[in-house]
Image (cartoon, rainbow, N blue to C red; front, side, top):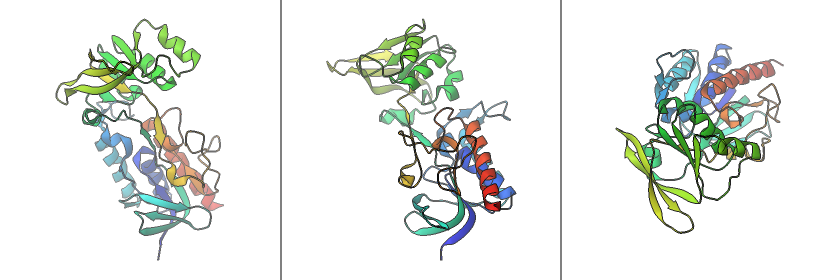
Length: 309
């Protein structure tokens, strides 16, 4: 027999845990399936200084532990595992965890998040949070007075580079091609900024540094000549995009061309009545913990009202 709940939350992180908190306080007894990375991207973040209520900052994993404990306090059932298939074509909705355990639900909240795209270097993950980042808004403050590098050539890279000039003495954009993919206005903004410079036709092939001392430089390879040089810097921001974790829902939920779930404006409703989406899985603009938590609250309230009707 499949285990049934009124609300099934797929994914954790700020969005999923907040949805669970609100749903459980509404006496909906939600079940939350944590996913392959319980707690989401903040569990691989070190210091979080921009989440309200923590004036001295807090470690990312600790913050997520607090979110989880608060949701559990009001009766959320936590399931360690990953949803591997869903069926939103019939009611009750069905989800399979780790290809074996089946869950059913009257409503579903999707909070599977998005994953930053990385270059693929071993040192990248080792130094993540120690000089390597994929979010200038989250971590730029920690790089005051330092020289930084940004990898990428799209709008995201230009936005990150421009934002980082508020803190860094110099920002160098490293791009594999000899021209940017970013929109003309974003290109002009970056190219005309006195603190931003560019290295063209180059790829990062290694990162120098340690967890104790942080990033000290990069090894760059010219994609045409193969020549390699060392480039000194104190931080690396990877800005080659994010990938929403939505493959599970292809063919069942409407998505944009990048794979982000579409929701009705001013709500978290998807194209399937009773299925809601919150957090980075449907947010192509902000991608912050506090905005994810806000939409998690919205999703729980939307689900509660939908169930009432």
